[in-house]
Amino acid sequence: MIKSNKTILLLVFISLANVIGFSQTYNIGFYNVENLFDTIDDPKKDDAEFLPKGKYEWTSNRFDEKIQHINKVMDEMGPILVLGMCEIENKDVIYSVLEKSIYKKTHGVVHYDSPDERGIDVGMIYDSTKLKLLKSGNIRFTLPGKERPSSRDIVWGKFLSKKDTLFVMINHWPSRRGGTDDSEKNRIEAAKSARHFIDSLEAKNPKYKLVLMGDLNDYPENVAPKMVAEKLVEMICKESGEFGGSYLHDGEWNVLDHIMASPGLRGKKGLKTTIGSGQILSPAFLIQEFNGKKQPFRTYVGANKYLGGYSDHLPVLIQVKL
Image 1 (cartoon, rainbow, N blue to C red):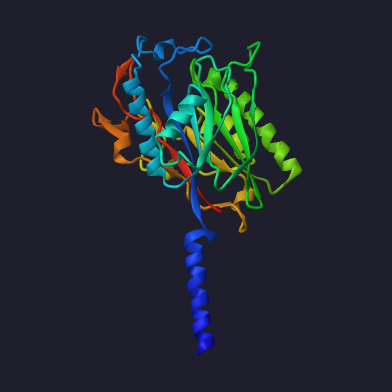
Image 2 (image 1 turned 90 degrees about the horizontal axis):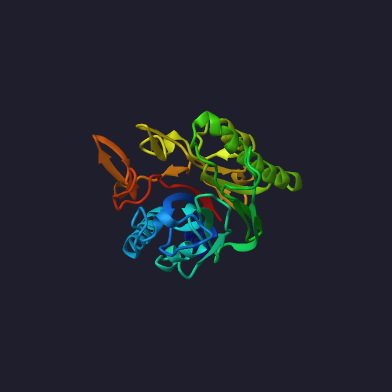
């Protein structure tokens, strides 16, 4: 009888341990926050339109509202292990997001200034209580026909989670401005740079653990994303959300915002992804209806009409277990 009671207590302990710490589930997400500029004129950035007297009349009140909106989205995501962001002006605006969030004391920042012509960068926040930042860097590339880099860098971080090493890459590939076909070569160039980094990791460790995410400005079936998906598992698809995509263009939803995971993250031990966990988040506050069709609730629409919404993109995430 005593032995039976000890067995029961042990099973209870194991169950509680799984709940409170030994098998913890967190989220890795990505969000194109749509033009998160501060209100300060930076002579090194093309930020004139996003100043109080600029085209968009970007005031402190509007900036503060934007920060509140991003925090509301972060709350919706649940416990964040890593969150990549794009269309941010600088590191300071990321810290402004953190300062008002529940992650103020627990999360760190990885960011590098890029040579983007619009003055926007990519960056990430990470849970420094769960991940130790070992190293970070940026991958800079020159687009075809250009003499020097003029697009967003790919920013990466190398983290330690207990005995696992995790790499995270944040991307915002060149836009489709000038036409999808004519601009495709630019995204292929970005994909080549990302793929070179991935191949170098695989050469050192075939079981490497990596998450690549970002606004790739291409759909999963396009050439550039497929160059990366040859090595990684695409976690976001049309079925990941209720609308069939993270972005609406010409009345059609599709996936511009991607999260891909290396096969090493699909194993049974250590840090791993949850199969089928890819999501495109679309709570009601991120959606508005226009002409009878639902669309992302944007900050601006048209030339400079302020809507006071969230973003023209929906956030995406996957679950991981530590």
